[in-house]
Image (cartoon, rainbow, N blue to C red; front, side, top):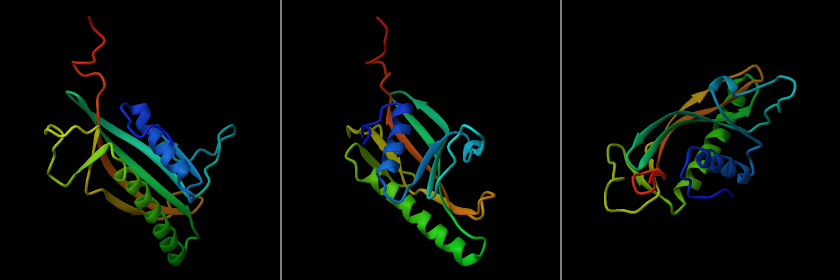
Length: 169
């Protein structure tokens, strides 16, 4: 498992990679731009399903903190009938909940509910994870016949380059 106290963008990506590597149902993890969700060109590994794709969309830099907004896609293959789509979405939602639970169970993070943000309070935590996490269903997303969920979440991490740790004399 990757370091469970990510302090950088790279370590955040590695954390999600590690969580997905340890989650038995997940067969493939990738990250990047939405256009990269599935690459079927020579020389690239074709996605296997269930498939988790992390799409970092933005970072807000706050003194001592970086707040990352991430789209997390979870897909399962399915036929194009409603029963198969429903089954794929159900499986994908359970995987999404498992990923979020793994983050919630770590000791390095505190949780904020909608509209309540305590990262500047007296608490000494390494990250905050904002709830609720909003997710929307995806049906027949690609030519392979996959369905699942797209969740948008925000994780705020301590920024190691604050005034106390800046590399200046």
